[in-house]
Image 1: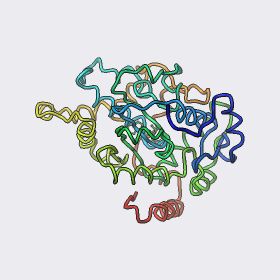
Image 2: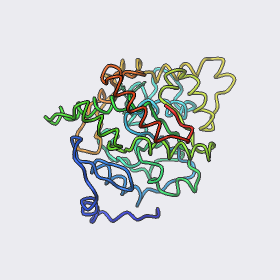
Image 3: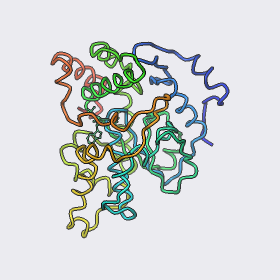
Image 4: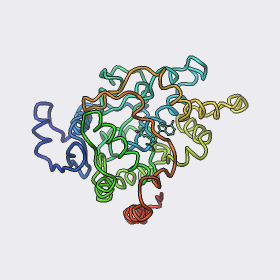
Length: 323
Ligand code: A3P
C-alpha cells in the first residue's frame, strides 16, 4: 500500500485532535502538512494516504473547491467516455450529477451518499480530488498517473466559497462568515484546502516539469473557449478528436452539454443529492450558482480585490503563474 506516515483508523481522530486547529469558518479547520482542512475532510485525506492504491492509467481531476470541479468533472467524463456513451439524449450527464459520475478519492460519500469502492472500479478510472499534490500518494507520481488541474481567479474562488459556506451554514441553522471575515482569512492562507496559492503552485510547478502527465487549466480559459479545452482534454486523455468528430462539431457539442446553462436547466432531472463528507446532504443546486468570471466585483470592494491580487502575485512571484 501507499507509503505513509498517516495513522490507523483507530487513532485517526486522536491524531487529528493533536494537530493545530483554528476557528473562523463554520467548522474549525485543522492544519496538516501546511494545509487547512475541515476535520472530516482530513480524515479522508489521511485514509487515502494510507489505503488508496493508484493505478498507472488513473486520470485524476484535481482542484481546490469552488474552482469549477463540477464543470471539469462533466467535461472530462463526457470527453473520456464519448465512444461508450455518445453525446445523445440518453447521455448519463443528463440524468446523473457530475459528482456521481466522477468520485472523489478522499471523500467517499460524495457520490450521492453511497460509498464508492474505488478498488472495484474498472480501469481506466476517472477520479477527482481536492488534495494538494504533495499529499497525494507518492505512487500517483511514480506511476505517471495523468492529472488535470483546474484553478480559478482567487477573488472569484473566494466569493464562490463564501456563498457556499453560507448555504451550508443556513442548512444547519447557522450563519456563515461575513465577506470581511472570509476575506481576511483567505488572505492569510486560512481557507479549506488552502493556502490557495500553495495548492496552485504545487500543481503548476509539476505541470512545467511533467507536461505529459499534468494538464494545468484555468476556469477563465474554459469560459473563454470551452471547445478548445475539450480538444485539449481529449488529446491529453489519449482520445483526440478524429477528423470525423471535428467535422461533426463534437467539441462544441461537448462544450454545450457541459455548459452552466445546460446543467442548471437539467437540475430537476438530475437525481439525488450529495453527501459531502460532513453528513450534510446537499441537493444538486449547491454546486451551481452563477458560473461567471469576475462576479467578485459584486461582493468585494475594488480595494479588497487589489489587496488580494497583490498578495497572490507576491506568493506566486517568479513562478510564471499569474491570475
Ligand atoms: P460560482 O459560485 O462563482 O457561480 P466547484 O464545482 O469546484 O464547487 O465550483 C463551483 C463553481 O463552479 C460555482 O461558481 C459554480 O456556479 C461553477 N460552475 C458549476 N458548474 C459550472 C459549469 N457547467 N460552467 C461554469 N461554471 C460552473
